[in-house]
Image (tube, rainbow, N blue to C red):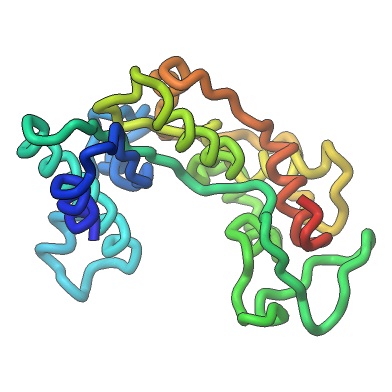
Length: 250
């Protein structure tokens, strides 16, 4: 699909100036020992090799990681092979877990939520699935001995959306893999953030539990290129919950 779109731009995009492709930080996540700071120079070739070696026996997440890596590599390869024939340039946006408000209405059908109610289960949605990664992960408290572990990195949906716009507007974004990431996080960070803004009905965990070293994508280069700033974890997590408790409120 990526190459089909780029081929169309090659053939018919005489007025196209830039193409921004939505990628993912999983294209960076080559395994490393200990703490590691990922940059736009990293590629997740491990996932591609795992899939080649193990095929259908590869871990489920490897299929997604490899697909995103191969798709982004294909886009850059296509551009390099045809850049003397096109008037446009290329950028990619790489982002992690996305928190923040939902802008579409999602209504539970078994019982209504109130300010004091606890979270309803994923099965109680009309489509049978949780509507937010963050929401689904707050259904139950994590084991205490994992609360300080590296849980990944995150960005607010509003910041990710703005970054897409800026990537099309800023000349300096040309030819860049643009990492959008607010920070790494542990689940205790999320629990503490929600407690700080008065959200009830969520796990409290163990405040003060030690955090383990994080490996995370470095967004500092992109932040300078695009002028990106980020919502706080407290605001982003709160707005995730409020948008689900009050559909259509954002």
